[in-house]
Amino acid sequence: MGYWGGVNINIAVALVLQLYPNACPASLLRKFFLVFKSWRWPNPVMLTKPHDAELGLPVWNSHQAATMRQVAPMITPAYPAMNSTLSVSRQTLQIMHEEFCRGHNIVDKLYKDYQKGDVLDEDKVESGEMWKDLFEPSNFFIGYPHYLSVCIVGPTQEDAQSWAGFVESRLRKLVSDMLGRSLPLSKIQLWPKKFDACVADRTALLTHAQRANSITYFIGFRVDTMRMRGNQLDVERQLTNFRNYELSRFHPLIPGMDILPRSFCVKELPSICFDDIYEGGKVAAMKLRRKLIEADPKRQEAKNKKKLAKLKKKMEAMQRKKQDAESANAKSNEEETADVVSNEAAEEDISDSRKRKREEDDTAQEGETNPVKGEDEEEEEAALLENLLDTIEGAGVAQHKTREEAEIDRQKLLAGELLGDGEDEADQGDIAAAVKNEKPERKLTREEREAEILRRSGLVIVSDDEATVLGGNMILPWRHGYKQAMAAGVKKEEPTDDQGGDDKASNKPKPFVRVRTTIKFKTKFDVVELDASGRVIDKGDDDFMPSLKWIGRKGGFEFKLGERGLGFYRTGKKVVVPSNVAYS
Image (cartoon, rainbow, N blue to C red):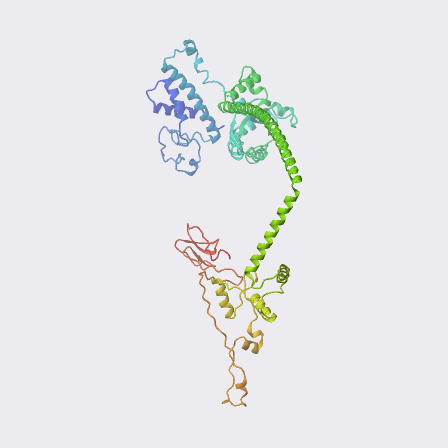
């Protein structure tokens, strides 16, 4: 089943006696749990070193590959040395380690009470009741939330016994190798005791003989919620593999031999699981389970956190109510003060309106008594203004004009008929045209000056927004013919008088000479080379050498396809794409 047997326990006790040869039995019991609680597995437990007598028998060796996969080796002292705990798995070792820790806590508590001088009851010591906690039955059937029963059935009693023995020897592989490794389980345990009963489903097609000749084993497991995907755990594939690869080796396999699995929750377990362990049966077991759950420190901590959260919510609600009441009182006080202030303001407005009405009535009475006086004052001010305007106009013009003439001149000036005295109409038109055409001179920028130089040299300058292809709107000289090329500035050699007119070859024009212009850019930029598709060709640098194929090993470089293309990249160097190829 994967647990220690009698031989293994004898070897473990012998090891403790070797480590503590002078200890008393009570101290040896405490040291036994202490040693195997803190044992560093998979270090082997050995009483003597294995030796090879050279008799042809295999001897256990820690350097072999098969022995390195053993979980908790315990080596026999006699020849040939072998591992007596080969069936121990990771799951069974976890359960045994928990029991070692529980036993050490119980025995260590008794030892410390004895060291403090606490008097133990002699009746408990003589009757052995003080060791009652150490030998309490396991809480297997209340310690797991889920269980799986494996019912082994056979057609006859003899066939059922042989078939059950074979299945029992393979159950550890189902638990440890198939279920424990392939399912998201945090803990799984096989109860080593069998029940002579059939707990298979009533709908299973079994004969009366099969139900009578059947035994059942129970497997408890706890699901790891962090690794669980979904809400259901499917074990059908593992059970099918167990039948096909392990149980199919039994010979002869008679019809009627089979295993019937069934899943249970802890509250759905049959009562036969609790009758022999707990005095009150299933009811007492469920009560004990509730006590253990309540005593769990993690559960208590979660409860305390919930209570604290509730108290915080209540405090926040109380503070919110208090703030609401304070804000309501403050609002009512503000409304009262606002009413008082509004009443006072209304009274002041009423008094002000009354005062204004009185003042308006007084001014109206004064205006009715002196209407002639106001009109005389307005006429005097208008006369003074006219005299002042006449004085200003007379100071600026040599010939005095009347008011009517000045008004006529003003209208003409606005209409553009009068531009100046003593000038002809033609002269006035020339002056106006000159003024219109004259523009203020503006200083050109450096870019505009450079663009003007390029225009004078015969190039067409366009902005990036105006053209998609540079020079696409420029008509080349050879498209206009020879005369247009000559007109564009191409030199042509005329025939001289010395040459004969009969020579027709001399009359042919010579090839025109292209005007070469040197362009010097003041702004420095990278010159790149483009391939046929218009992409920038990466020439490489100290960290990258482009290469379309493998040309051999290079120290410190690796050949691969990276961000800069296919080539040799420096090992361990971060790939940085240069700015002149970043837009390719």
